[in-house]
Amino acid sequence: MRTFRTLTVTALLAAVMSGTTAVAAEVNLYSYRQPFLIQPVLDRFTAETGIDVNVVYAESGILERLKAEGANSPADMVLTSDVGRLDDLVQADSVQPVQSPVLEANIPSEYRHPDGLWFGLTKRARIVVVAKDRVAPGEITSYADLADPRFNGRICTRSGKHEYMVSLIASIIAHQGADAARAWLDGVRANLARKPQGNDRAQVKAIYEGVCDVAVINSYYMGKMATNEDEPEQQAWAEAVRVVFPDQPGADRRSTGTHVNVSGAAVTKSADNVRNAVLLLEFLSGDSAQELYAEQNFEYPVKPGVTLHPIVRSWGDFTADDINLAEVAQHRGEAARLVDTVGYDHDAGS
Image 1 (cartoon, rainbow, N blue to C red):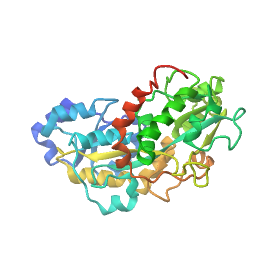
Image 2: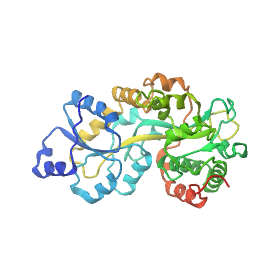
Image 3: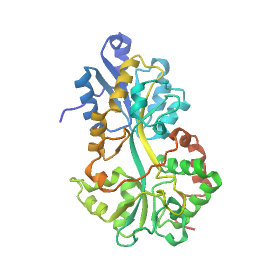
Image 4: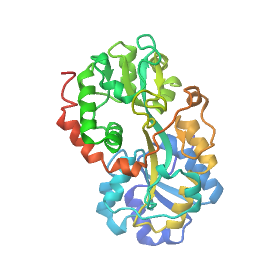
């Protein structure tokens, strides 16, 4: 496997200072996404366009780095795995608007910022997974069911302060208001089987081990566990649960569709290689890159009509919430405060 070219910030700054980037066919990318996922896509972009992609990978701190670098930042573009981080870039005034007929044609409006400040590239549904042997089909159809007393002591989640949970709570605020979201969150807290902990895979493992019967996770983890050859025990975890897409049309309660988050990208305000950055954005929204995303990470392509991975297709069709994610992001701060208000992460149940 070819090793991706990863430059340090210092090296990129040196390149900028020497003027080499002013004439080079390149684009400088800061990425929260992991190399194993994004590298093959960027390799194909370089092969097709001749434009090199210089990448700084980071698990955190990219926004702080952009702020510190200011107008001298070498970054042309930022790639993230959550709309929250895209919104953070907007709030920090670190990105610039992009207008592109290609992006507007490839990406539905609910998955891009209304002013072109960021663009969603892949979708991940916030699904409910249930124990096949302990939860009957149709027993749970809505996020609202998670707060129902009949699930007392049967629910596991990760921390309410994690960005995936915060985005889900923010979507409930956007649709139903803060009071309804607080009541829902308090009800879910009362039904927890244990103190919120671990990542999404840990919730599925807990179901497998009988700790709980219901969990909330991002959809692509099901594919990752089902195909995990390095840790084959995860295949048994995935086999123990059934996928539920909450709030589908026709459900008894709220039927706005399943909450969907996105990975996405934005062009920085400091970008020297704006044209190349836009070309990369357009490439990432196109058929070949979307198919690679779907194949590598079991995510849903953001571009309509792109073929799904067979494992993803096996979960069935679903209707996604079509609220613009920029509107959802506006409620993230309030959502995080609700988590503290109800003491969601402090204990299990009431």
